[in-house]
Image (cartoon, rainbow, N blue to C red; front, side):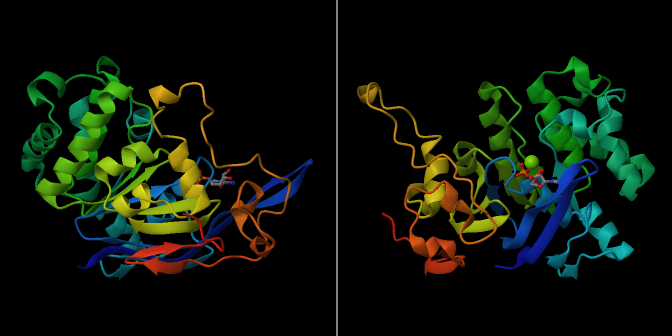
Length: 319
Ligand SMILES: Nc1ncnc2c1ncn2[C@@H]1O[C@H](COP(=O)(O)OP(=O)(O)O)[C@@H](O)[C@H]1O
Ligand SMILES: [Mg+2]
């Protein structure tokens, strides 16, 4: 199957501090490679601060990488304006916070129509119908909602409007950055089901970004686990979630495992230690918190293939 996106060895370091404070370099994205097959969803998972949003911004050309390569739909994305134009038109983004991407003073109709105007998609006379189609696609009745303002909608409806806006241009790919984390738990599954439905209907490829593995299994085909700017595990979503091999993936799974009612008094096993004060950029970055760390982990493990489409960056053979 052909790839819609292929990222190779992408790097982005930020320098923080300066005036009155010591300068500190954050290796936000440090040699990340990943790929997404056409019509599929890759989940990019990791805790806050692991570099997920920076990855999204790099792919969309919102920040320039220090090095590495981004190929979207057979086109290299770089500072060249035609490649930036292509990715901004054909790859849309859904933000965690609906208010980050919509103007609260605009009506729903104009919010969804705006990207069509910006990218000159459809004839102006056709755009009204395109907006209505996009709203119907996200299960919103255009006659009820098109002339409302965002604050008149529920959180779930507002995020549906954001999704309608992202698909109105008929993009090839959508990057969804924690699209349900600010929503009520009761409406999350509905939005995830909608994402799957839109994928089946329009063949859209997704990069689904999350810190919460419990939502990942609804939408994902493949998963890449990111820890402090490095991919530590990659594989089929079912394989990785059923049998996580990297200690960090295990810790992420522990944080969502359901409490066993027969077991209320025994302590929940969380396979993670409190961080030691070490230089995380030398050796395995996770070793400061890893319960299995050994002397060898002071060296940097590389991502090694361990099975069918499965790779792990860890020296310790666990489970
Ligand atoms: N523009 C920036 N300037 C300085 N540091 C940044 C900037 N953007 C992100 N960072 C840092 O890069 C790291 C990764 O951030 P981010 O990509 O937002 O992670 P995530 O989305 O996984 O929470 C964090 O340490 C963050 O503080
Ligand atoms: Mg983020």
